[in-house]
Length: 196
Ligand SMILES: C[S@@+](CC[C@H](N)C(=O)[O-])C[C@H]1O[C@@H](n2cnc3c(N)ncnc32)[C@H](O)[C@@H]1O
Image: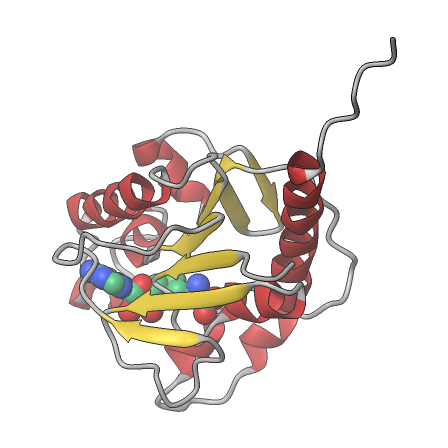
């Protein structure tokens, strides 16, 4: 696995990254906010609308913010919707920018995560695991049940609550990473000489 590189767009605290590191990838994460103190891979703080040069990666993963999509499904009278109404255009702009960067990887292997509601604005997801909807080009994979998704509802208030709640569950990240590793190893095997 030496040298396989994964890029994590909008990496936050590294939900995707933990799974890819444990599957043997190197990971570089990009985020507009500074997560350098706790991010588990190599961290680059950057606005992805301004940055346009990325290392040659084997796979790109990412999660653009979902709040603008989620809020379109909530009653307008909800306090959080009244105070900060959804800006769907902003949500779509971010999703499309993440997708545009992700699709540059060659051969194409990329995965973007968002919420079910995003499909109304950016097109259908390829699959979903619970509330995590996935767009992209990636092999099928299994997610062993671990229950790690559910702890997010019980998190006490804290400065990092938003970031920890949006973390990709480890079982999902690891399941995808292992399947991509297997896929990359299979496609890089030398072809057998045809028998004469
Ligand atoms: C849903 S969270 C990602 C959660 C992460 N995948 C995880 O598993 O921990 C979306 C992230 O996108 C980042 N973000 C938003 N706008 C951005 C931009 N213009 N450039 C880079 N990152 C951005 C946010 O700071 C946030 O950390």
